[in-house]
Amino acid sequence: MFTANDFIPKKYTSTIEQGNFEWSAPSNIALVKYWGKKDNQIPANPSVSFTLNNCKTITKLSFSKKNTSTPLSETKDDFSFDLLFEGKPKEDFKPKIQKFLERVFVYLPFLKDYHFTIDTQNTFPHSSGIASSASGMAALAMNFMSLEKTLNPEMTDDYFFQKASFLARLGSGSACRSVKGSVVVWGNQANIKGSSDLFGVEFPNTIHENFKNFQDTILLVDKGEKQVSSTVGHDLMHDHPYAERRFAQAHENLDKLISIFESGDLDEFIKVVESEALTLHAMMMTSMPYFILMKPNTLQIINAIWKFRAETKIPVCFTLDAGANVHVLYPENVREEILQFIQDELVVFCQNGQYLCDEIGSGSIAS
Ligand code: DP6
Image (cartoon, rainbow, N blue to C red; front, side, top):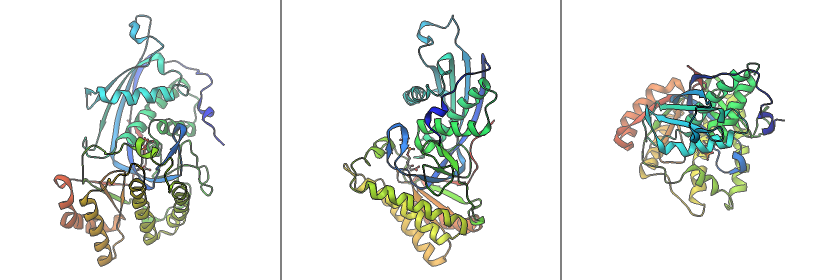
């Protein structure tokens, strides 16, 4: 069994003065949701997600070793970094990065030896209501691992990806599922070999053809700022009247998905996925304080999907994040019919008619 201490490096055998790396990391969409956490970003229940392909963060990390001529404000006792978003300095992102660096410093002890420029951009529109924390933290973690691998060239690929996911998790829980693989499990689950609370692992069992190239069309219902940050949301699960039952249910649903992934039973898949989405929102509605994050158009879309599915028997379903946008999930072989349905009946409920077409991808890529 891994412990966090396994990710504290012993000794670096190589050095580097300066250079840069670039990684793109995708967003992911949870089927069984992570909602509630313990100290140190340990999830209260396991989750599983599809990795996306098109919604990505691309981050270039440039680094140069601090030297004696470095100004006093950038001594070895401090982290030193500039943050660029779409090429321009972005001060509001810095506190989150600073906190991330503090959290991971024990695992990446070289971090104070360099000055970094973190140059980041997303492929999806800014303020689309799509959280960039998963893809953003994953992309940053990949870059830091590339630097660590340069300092320790003996590092194995397994360690590289596991530690990248471990670090990404410390930035944002769901980010640990954006590192490697198409279907990723995070959190201990008795029946899933290798699963861990510390990092995401590629789903190790059989996955039926039906899920190959699975599609996710994201309907942008409300592009506004999130009403509840995920940190506040997770916190609301402490002392929540239904928390324990919910955490047990997540384990049960993940077990169900293991057999669904194997059999390819799309009807059962739909039941688990839609129930998870509504349960996530039910948790928010029944916490204190309570929130409703769905908008009237979210419900309009859900009802339209249910009606369309009943009439056509096409296996399309929805899931939700902690917001009003709707992810429409469906197999590749019904893509044309669903895109037509979205055009005809769902676009009217999207803000400015906007939606994003995505599908299952395979994880972070170095460029
Ligand atoms: C509803 O990963 O954003 O999307 O660990 O506080 O950064 P932090 O939370 P975050 O929570 C995501 C919650 C969710 C469900 C999920 O992705 O599993």
